[in-house]
Length: 438
Ligand SMILES: Cc1ncc(COP(=O)(O)O)c(C=O)c1O
Image (cartoon, rainbow, N blue to C red; front, side, top):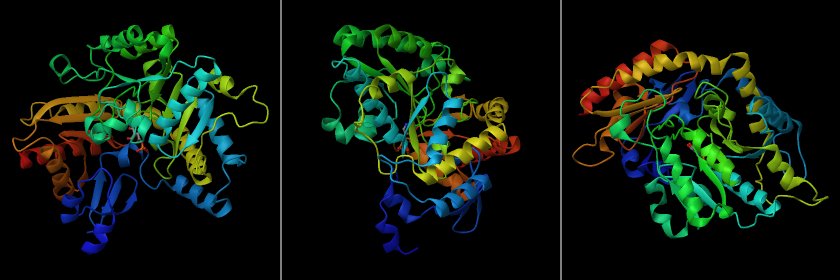
């Protein structure tokens, strides 16, 4: 590819200058592998970008999308509908936690987060609690890159240059990472339920009657996999209920089998008022996001408005037919192939494999839950992030392996239908990478 062509594309969340000096180009994918421009077969240790839990180009999803593209490419999204999107909403209701029976569709996780925040405001207004406008997020949280999600999110690099333009009226719970007490935890760390208690402080400070919603990822993903401490999510739920605050779980990563159940809410036995989804809903094949909403919230906003539009929100591509077809096909495969159960069976294998790297001289922590895992590397003397990036590049060029790094944290999202030997082979390759890059 010529330099001119490489230069035209401004790549997201990528060091453009560095990347374009030696581009890592993927040209094809099938099952658990990509193929690179130089015709190597590359194993994907990250299921796309947490997206493709059942592998790439699943034939049933490909077929459904191809068929849909030929039958109905687009249907006006406002004041009109098409069958597949209603079917998808109904199907999601069947697998969602009890009571979350309504789905609002968007096109990404970022849009899902902002939509959930707007629904929270609309609900309180409809409920005559107009003062409930404040939001509570969490340090190190990631809810995408739109202004709402960024404001409640807590990843410094993503917020830094937008600081003055973030939403007002947002507080952040402390993150739950406690390296001193929880290093090398397997599954949920023992310590840290008390990190939820800061919500009480915000209620005391602002008065709870001003707080609309709390939004957290049940397992913080993008910051480098922080499983919730034991009892933490339950405590958050109790506090929200006590104070009339809506609880939103951002399950863009954790839904659809990533933690061995349809939703993390099911796995952890805690039901929020709204769940945001994206990624796995279409197995990454077509962009789609959504918000699953508790029935009472929907009823409160929608009922009694006659013929008028009840909620002034939506996107041209909300409920796009191709996404709906991909979503229906994906959910069918999850069900027919017992994918969530497979993920559950793989969890101890993955746990053993990832923790086999504890004791490596570059590794300062390892965390895992479900099929989500992270290896925290000590930063190199030359600066933070360099060791992680070097590992990503070395894995690609020398081990035919895609490994995701967020700064110095290597992140892993094995396929929900992985072969155990591939999981073991992944971490043997990662060990060789770490030995090499030093
Ligand atoms: C928890 C969570 N929320 C929101 C998003 C944003 O999703 P998108 O990149 O589709 O906008 C992500 C993306 O990784 C995520 O992990």
